[in-house]
Amino acid sequence: MSSLQSYVIVQETEWAGRRFCTARDRRTNHSVYLVGEPLGMVGGTYAHPNLPALKELGVEPPTRWWVGQIPEGEKLEDLRLQGSLTESDLLSALLSTVDALLNLAATIPPMVPVYIDPACIVRDRLGRWQLDYLALAHAPEAHAKTPEPLGVYPFGVLLYWVVTGETIRRSRPQVSQLESLASPGLQLLIIRCLGRSYPSLAELRAELARAGKDREFQPLIQRVRARAQAARSEAARQFVRAPHIPLDDRPWAAPPAPRGGYSRGALPLQYQRVRRPWKRWLGTLIVGLFTFVLAAGTAVKLGLVPEQYLPVWLRSVPTVTVFPKPELVHPVYAEAQMVPQRVMLFLNGEKRGDTYIYTSPNHPYIDVTAMNRLLSRKLEWVVAANGQVVLQEGDRSLVLPVSEQIGDTLWIKLLPIVQEWLGMRFQSYRGGILHFSSKA
Image (cartoon, rainbow, N blue to C red; front, side):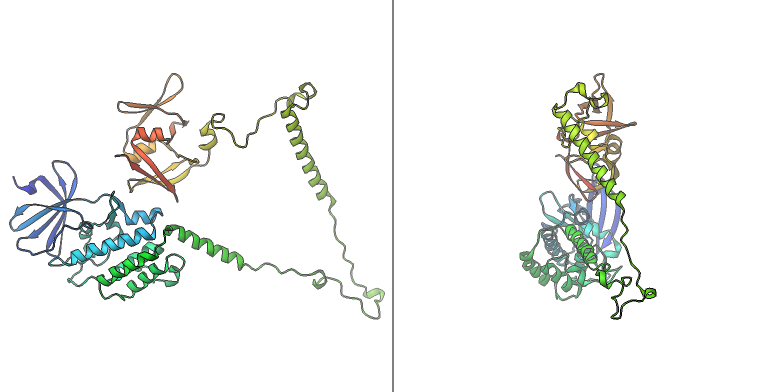
């Protein structure tokens, strides 16, 4: 049986004289990469820490085949959209990508992409950045028609998109936008890459190593928000209010008396201030009523007034607690009755879809139907005889400590015990993005 018969090819393309395939392993039912190169091709090595690992599969004349796993981890594009990308991570990813491209350019014939897709730059679980050039090979527009040396312009386009969120194809680059979004070292990198000031990738790599000393660890998305806040503050400062006009300079004020005095027909009009005493009375009445109610409630609460001297409607004063204890107030009544928020749910860096949640100071509320739809679960819930809600999945069950039934939907609070039972961990909620990770 041939070694290739264990795989079902799903997608195939050619790049630099090689065949790149996305296939499904019949034995494990997992997706893998297949790379085929003609026999006798003196190519470079595929063993590089910043490239997907490949191992030789076998030879089927006239092609030698290699197989490798699809890289799994957090993509640079997702990190930027989530707002958790820092300049330190960005420069590390760019340095690893340059090393990977230098290795690909050393192959014969060289593999030279036209642009760098941020979705093909992946950070694995060990924190190592890799260039998924096998996924880049399936994009025909990313292949160079002639094997020319890779320039630095694609890196400028990539950095400009990460910092500003705009693409060079749709708008002209605005260098002034970089001043409030990037550090001086990163600004210089972007300007020089867009201007093709580096003669080779080796010069760009040396500049990246020097720019690492000027790294700033503030997330880029926070700088975008800070710039918007600064723009709003500047607009508020430039808002022109009506100038203050003194009483004597108002155009309707009476002019000064002439030296010869006024005749009876030429006397100026006398302006009198209109008094509205009812406003003062109304304000005094409101303040007095509020003070009386506050004092009466305090006296009744402290027991200063005997109960038999009070009317019936004042004998039971409601208790208003500004900061209630958790055991006195039902958590759902205090938290989940708020307006639901629409969020985007990510699992292990993979976008699953959007849903509604109720936020709380520590853990969010999510309904069971949305978890079954977005996370491909089979969760069911029942109400026991003692009134407790039991969450079930297969043969497993869990008594929910906090839940709320709204109509036919059950909302559960993702406490640590619930996360442990579901086999997942709540990581962060920021900017309308809810991020989970699966426990190993």
